[in-house]
Each structure stands twice: as C-alpha cells, then as structure tokens.
Amino acid sequence: MNSTPQATLKASRWGWLTLFASTTTLFCCALPILLVTIGLGAVSAAMFANVPFLTFLAKHELWLFVFSFCMLSISAWSIYRPGRSCPADPKLADQCARADKWNKRVLIISSTIWLVGFTAAYLSIPLMNLFS
Image (cartoon, rainbow, N blue to C red; front, side, top):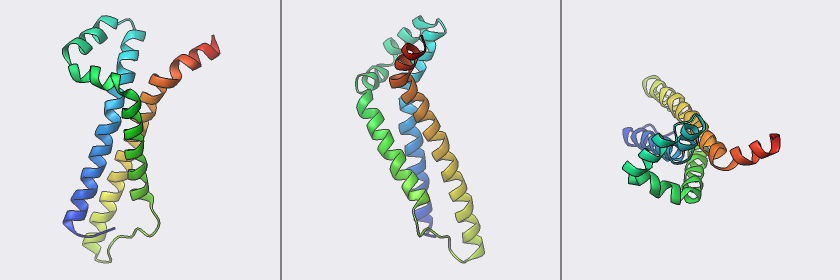
C-alpha cells in the first residue's frame, strides 16, 4: 500500500464511493419491496412521488446493479490484491493497518447491502414461487 497521504485519501474515497453505489441499490429496490411487504405500500408510493431520483434508479436498476457490482469487485481487488504491503515506518504502518481494517469493513457492509438489494430485486419472487 502506498504510504502517501494522497494515496490514503484516494483509497478512502474509493471505499465511500462503493458504499454509496451499493446503498442506492438498497433504496431503489429493497426498501420499496420491504415497505409493500409489511403493508406500507402508500409510504412506498409517496416516496417515489416525492423523490424523483428513486424513479430514475428503479427504471435503470439493471445498470445500477451492474455498475455497483463492478465497483464492489474493483474495491475487493484493490483491498485483497497480491503484493500489498504497509510501509516499514511504525507510525505509517499503524495508519496503514487502520485504514486497511476500515476499508475491509466498508467493503463488507457495502457487499451486504448490495446482496440484500439484489435478493429483493431479482431473487425474492422466484424464491417465493419455489417455496409456495
């Protein structure tokens, strides 16, 4: 891993971008399905009526999932790629280890959010039909 402050800031931005990309899949697909499932369809309709960006996301959900999956894949590769190492300086090595730990946490949270959204958007109806 690069030890420069710019490289650390760039890695941090990458992690937050992945989290944002995966969270949009949750808002466009999983949240409305959850609201309708628990009987709050009117809330879901009101959200789509008052937040036009949600309608845009829902119309382009396939591209949203493909883009966010690519972002997660690139992020996972950058975190777990072979040959990564922290600097020898103890202070920088500590910062590197902390950043690496947080990057892994953000990746796990982002991947979980993406998986929930993907399941709600593409797997919930086939699974429901399979078990009914």
